[in-house]
Image (cartoon, rainbow, N blue to C red; front, side, top):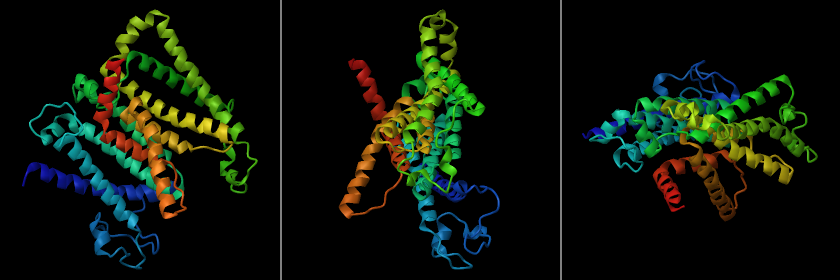
Length: 387
């Protein structure tokens, strides 16, 4: 049996196991339940699920999609999530290491050799993002909410990978093939300024100088969706106040480096240390992902007088940006509406009426950018050469 086939079987099995865990995340996290305790139980009869009834994909089929004890129907979502995760893990492995549709620039005789020579970190970064997007989209579809813990986990993984990845793969290869984000001197200083501004905004928010928007969201007696007179524009202006220190510090930091000795001095050398450039590149992707969605949310709310998009979408694209970088996350943002149009066309064609949240469209757009990463990279490089 070829080594690649063995690897694909292992990757499929491993992906299905991760999918099984994602089912736990999808059910428990939005309900504020622990992901580790208690062990898996049937929601209907509360009987503990034995290990032989908890084998990914297999157990659902053998049990006939019913609980062994109470015969309550088990949602097909469990099987679908496990299968989708397994297929995503396999697809990424094939695209990266077998057909090499995504060029990594790692010299090795075989795809498995490429994986072992550092490609494993690129692969890990990709599947963590895609698994997180899958979980967030499933939760969003069911409950219209995106747990921020999922977004924060993806963000942390992206920041760590971009920082330590240069010790696994040659920084020149990382930069040339855009394996993960890396900041230029200008991007680095603007990102550092934005981070300082974010800290200031959080302190002002904690001190009560600025107020959190939509604080009445938890008031179940008068939900804002049922109040046509709710002052959405005033609420979103609170978010503008929160963002002002971030914008001012970012532009101020850029101005400072352009009008002082820092531009050609120690900052240039320090910011281009591969690990620092990687960390700030990932952080710039986070800010860019948040910025494009947050700007749309603010402008849409001011224009239409009702809340446009959700803060979960802001954090979701921020997390994606931390992994794929600022340029690619902006591209993904502008691709997402096309998936929305496809869904709208489906609704019109089959006369369906169910609306779905925007998170899944954003996730599909990020997945699309990851698949066609090299095409977008080459196209952008061509534009730079043209101009």
